[in-house]
Length: 247
View 1 (tube, rainbow, N blue to C red):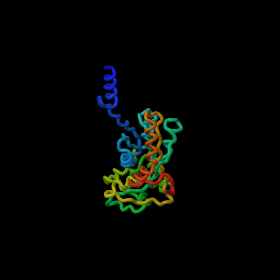
View 2: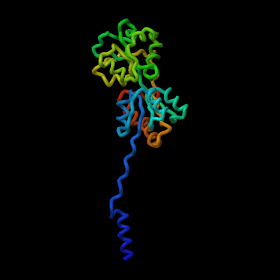
View 3: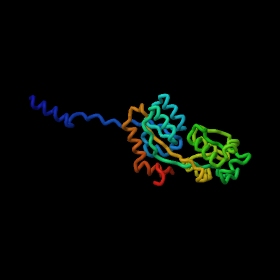
View 4: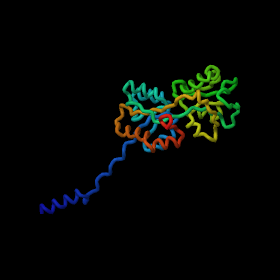
């Protein structure tokens, strides 16, 4: 009788009894990312949760203790400042971009070059200087010697690049400075005016694992995914550039 009971117990353990509970699905990561990454990151990791905004605003939230696992910024300076405070792990550049000027499809101000933004009566929208795209914009204008004259035509300073794009798309400004990847998202509604290569800033995006993350292994795997072949291919498909020049 004892031997029979042992046999029944063994069968139950080997699968003859109730089914074992299913394995838990991986916990979604919370990714804080620059607004210009709104479309591409969910294409790379669709199961994660995202907060998209200006990189400076997101960094401030991380500094205040907001729960995030990964921070992806549209420049290197902001994550490096967080790294200096030990709020994130060492940032790494994972992609690059380029700055362009966009005008409404009808182009009522007849803008053909960046120089035209200095004409009297032209309305220009930019991002605030504290936002990476706003900083890059000021770099372009200084290099072209247009900073004072174009600043005089600025009608709005936005909190992120998508807000700049929306103003131009809706015809609320004659022109705005955005990333090339953002301009692609509204191809039928805006036209692109190229910035001379001599004035083009180095637009590098850096990503870092947040030090307070409770899912560091998964967060590091996300960073590796961005740098991997499939992640880089998706970034390229959305118009982003390789993380290093000449590759």
